[in-house]
Image (cartoon, rainbow, N blue to C red; front, side, top):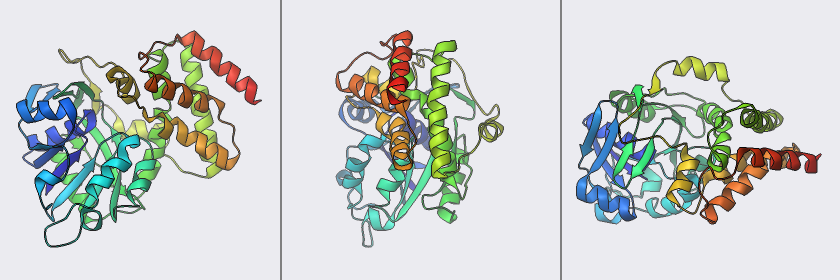
Length: 338
């Protein structure tokens, strides 16, 4: 199989680099300065054993590849807000022997939240959800760091509509050879919703910095409680905190890496890079959506979604909202909704 990594940033670059290290064929898809760096100098992956460089084919879209191969696997690792545009480019790509990528090739969604597999199923017949537990950072164009050890990450995967198949098991075997644990599960959405609850902290961290101290931790607890209440009202199952801890154990421990400081989670990194967009609409916004559908108030998640979107559009600095001010705004939002 050949792996085409659509969005070779922090997660995509790490998975692509580790697969290449394990001897798998990999193509990286990127744009702008990152694409230029990948094409000119290769992917530089900073991991606990040192900095590794992989000179891999790097493209902006499917056209330079010509007809895709029947054994290609597409790994979608863009932010959810960029999913539709990426799929519009790749779904109609022709595949050798007839048909298109959307008709014939497997697509794995290595993304936060739960929305991307639903978007993908409108364009692809064979969609797999992936619950990504993978600490990684986009350091600079062409450079990605992944400090996890002894494993680089844990990637639960399964068919987006539920169930498993031989394709998922073959991909999991390649991931296992590339320093990932990759459980193939029939209920991948249950793991994705569990991850979603944890990702509700992303916007808070991006706005006001690390969630430390009683006030910040208390705010996140209230934000998560809204999420749990919404999932309960919608009767959506999710893995428990205890189950997640048991699976993860000490398998993915971040270790300090020289010249590769970890500044924060994916939303924090979006603000630092000034991308102009952020994934809060598909994290906190997912809870807001379900809350409206099932009659559960979600004022805190709505606040975080709105503020994170404003920060991204206005290119405000990550962590620049004082934690005390965010807590005050949250208290006001709760009172207004009462």
